[in-house]
Image (cartoon, rainbow, N blue to C red; front, side, top):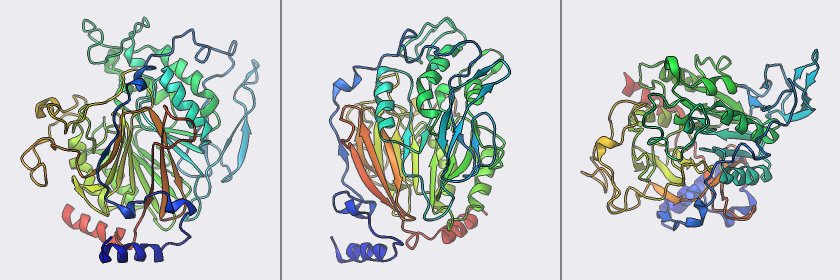
Length: 480
């Protein structure tokens, strides 16, 4: 380590408000980076269970009679003192509540269930464990993911899009492993709503007691007659849109202790003139980092992925929104869409940047579309640029790189330096925020036992190195 690096590390440690977590000697942190790129060889046995659970499986069958409620789930409101079940009421922070739901006049009431509210927002107040998962579906791989996730005892679940994959089925229940080539003679794919019911029944044991916050993915579009889209997504989940002054279920924000989450929509307008962008500007401008030091953003398709699948298809969203998120000091970005795991170094505009966020792709929940295993930087895998835009996003922004090692090319010819770790395995992640500057990120792969770790790192905020107010002033000057 050079003397400059040593000085920087010591300076960061001096400004910590609480002690370094005890396991730090064994676990690397972002202070040690940027890291040399690592690719874990693909284990083909991970694909073996990518088969949807049938409707005869006991875990998806209806277990109640008559009008008794089922598929019960809990979602957070914008602050600690309210919760969504099917209504909102004022609640105390960090408190265990018991509830029943249904219609007592029939009578048709659920069994007594419980959940715990989030801690009071503050720089020293955080949920113990936040689970992050994407592209879940309802396969046997999914059941392994949820089983491992449940064993980790999360206080909050972040689901970054692609929930039930009900749109892989026609309305008669006929399904396929390939959405793009499914039912070519059908003008509209439609969707099979019982798959949503199966998913809700399977997940009820977990999400009836642990709040789940969902953002839409491409499989939630579900094109139906009358040009209807996102109907199931909008109807089956609750969103704190009104509380955070969003006009849409496709983008919203909420607090969980000292963490402010911004959930963004990639399948709705996001350019600078769009309602979503203007809402995001207001939301970030009103954020008090002395109360919620950590800022986490999440949406479905990643900006920084090195896999061939969906390579750079969301470049227009990155071009439109990256500056805004960067200058307001987003710490971590969570995405799905790519059916694999990847963690970046701190990055901004494809370059290593100590003030950029760490981008983490967790689209490895276990869905039936199988796993992403090919990398765009491997020989013969770089896609033709005009094939990359997603039809639902519109526009084409992914041109050849104009700087850096990939200058003049559409793809890198080796694992990019911004890609710190990637592996094609199913699994989930756990975020443990320790204090206002340190957070432990752990990724668990399904192939391992419950306690084995696939990837682990401390993500360290450095507010003295990257002061937010100076960044914002730069952004506002550039915007003018």
